Amino acid sequence: MNSNRVKQILSSSTDIEVKYNGASVWIDQLNEDGKTAKVHLRGPLEERTLVEIGELVEE
Image (cartoon, rainbow, N blue to C red):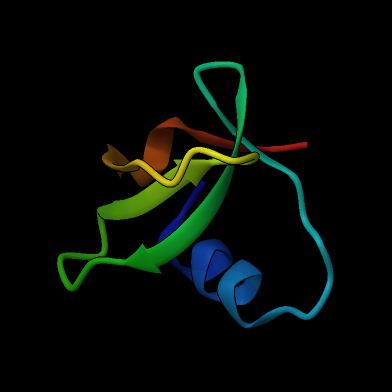
């Protein structure tokens, strides 16, 4: 995924499924470097993880 698509997903009112290592995640924010983002797993756990946006896959 690229930074422009991450920005589009963040600003969308539609629920867009994104996966990281096969797990469904929410993107919380795109970092200023444009290469990493904070994400968390969908569900009750709120643990945030910093990931490379190239590893995010839109379903």
